[in-house]
Image (cartoon, rainbow, N blue to C red; front, side):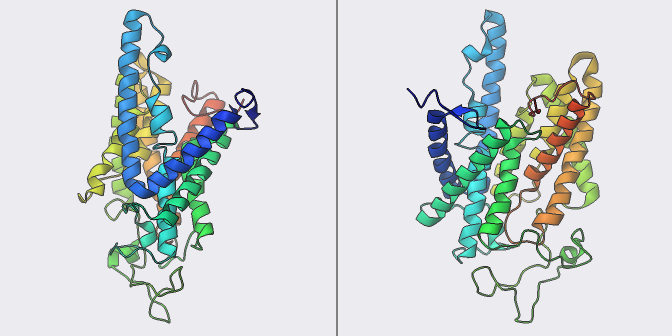
Length: 363
C-alpha cells in the first residue's frame, strides 16, 4: 500500500500509521474527558504497572529460553499507557482541556473548593461538545508528542505535550496564563494559609463566561497539603530514594512512575493528604538506572535521591507560578518532568552521565 510507504515529515511514521494515530488520539482525548482527567491518569499508572510487569517477566523468561524480549512481549507501556488510550498528553490533557472548556461555558457547578476549571476529578460522561473538545486536545497532544519525539528534542515529549496543551487551553478559552498574584508575588502562599478571599469592586471576580464567580480563595495552591518547601523537599528525598531503588532492583525506568500514578486513586477517592509523586519517581528512577547497578548502586541511589528532591522542588516552583493564581489546571508534575528530563539530557550531552536512558537526545 502506498500509504504504508509514504512517510509523514518530522513525525517519522507512515501515512497509514499517522491516520490511525490521529483517529485513536481523538478517541483517547474524548475518552479522557468522559472519564475525567485524573481518573484517566490513574489508569495510566495501572497500565504502566501492567506493562512493566510483563516486560520484566518476559525478559526473565527470554533470558532462560534464549528468546529476544521483543519477540514475545507486547509493548503495553508504550502503546497503551503512553499511547492514545491513556497517554497523559492525550487522555489527561484532553480531560483537563474539557474541564477548562466546561468551566468557561458555566457548565460546572460541583462545589469544588477552587475554580471549577481546576476540577480534574470530574467526569463528563456523554456531554457531546465537551467530549469533542477533549478529542481535539487529544489530537493536539499527539502532535506535540510526535513532533518533539521526531525531532529528538531533549526532554520527555509526553510531559511536554501535557504542559503545552495546558497553555493552549488557557489561551483558547480565555483564561490567564499566569493570573494575578495576590500577596507579595507569585511565590507567596501566605494568603492561602490565612484563608484570604478574592475581592473586587463588583463583589467578586468576573468569570470567563461573563458572570460573577462565587467567593474564592485569594491563592489556590495545587495541593493544600503539599506546598511548604521543607515538606516538599523531604518528600522528594524519600520518594526519590524509593524510585531509584525500584529502578535498580527491577531495571525498569517506569515502574516507580506507574506506582506513583496508581496511588492517586486514593486521592481521587477523597483520602486526605495523599501525596503526588510521579514527578519525583520518574527522574529518580531514570537517573539511578542510567548510572547502573552493582558496584555503582550506592552512587545511583544518592543521585536518584538528588533528582527526587529536584523534581519535587521544580514541581512546586511551577505550581506557584502557573497554578495557584490562574483558573484552570496546569500540571506541575508534567512541567517538572520536562525540566528534570532536560537536565538528564544535558548531563548526558556533557558526558557527566554515560547516556540519557529513555530521554531523547539530538542526533
